[in-house]
Amino acid sequence: MKQTEELELFLQKADDLLQSKYVLADIKIINLLKAIASSETILNVIKSSLDNFDYQKEKLNILRPSTYMEDKGEVVLPEDAKTVIAFVFNLLMEIDGKKVDLNAFMQKYFFEGGSYYESYASFMTKVILPFKTAIKTVMERLISGEMETPFEEKKEEVVAEKKDFTTYKEEIKYLLEKDLNRLQKRRLGKVEKVEVKVIIDAFIASLELDVEGIKYAYYAYKYAALYQDIGFNYKKITKILKKEEII
Image (tube, rainbow, N blue to C red; front, side, top):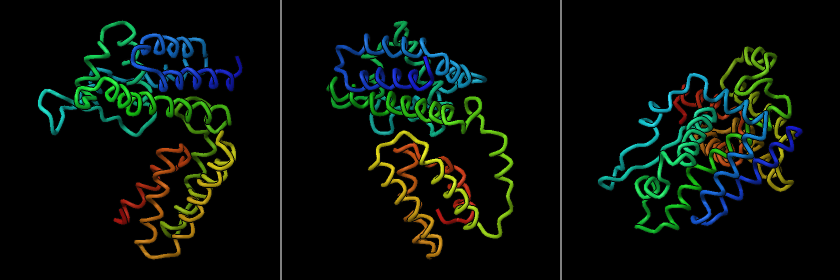
């Protein structure tokens, strides 16, 4: 299969799982794992994510005790795609191999008043959707050539980041303009692309405003970065703004 076909198959099976009923979870998870196994590129992405990944250690970081219910817990996934992919893949393998009972897992970490339907929906939203999003993001960057290998930027892009800037605003503007260029390569609907472009353009314009204006524009950009998979430089910009004590 071509890489685009591999991604399309994965997204189809991921959506089948996300939209499924709880009683069909087992077969939908199997189908998703089969789609992954049939994709040479996605397998390479997962293998790369597993490099130096300590599943048992990450469990302690991600599967946390509930702050409001005794004997319950919560799942707190990190923002980086590599850890999300590695952790959720391991979890799905354990569910498929019956090492983890999905029902018991949901009732402990996604307890929603005892409702299996609500617990399953929460599991889909907080675990499976981020997994789908992370793989989609990495695959699209591999397909477009923005990445040469999973989780590694092209060498010329790394060199470009060494450019000197007079102010933090110049650096943020530079990073946002790169995001605009990359936006054109992303597989988004026409409306979604326009919406994200407006958000990034507004952020660039806000750099001429006061700190509050920049802060509000950043939070809109953050939403696009985390939920629309567009803010390639979100972490870099966040680091800059924290250093400047704006956020």
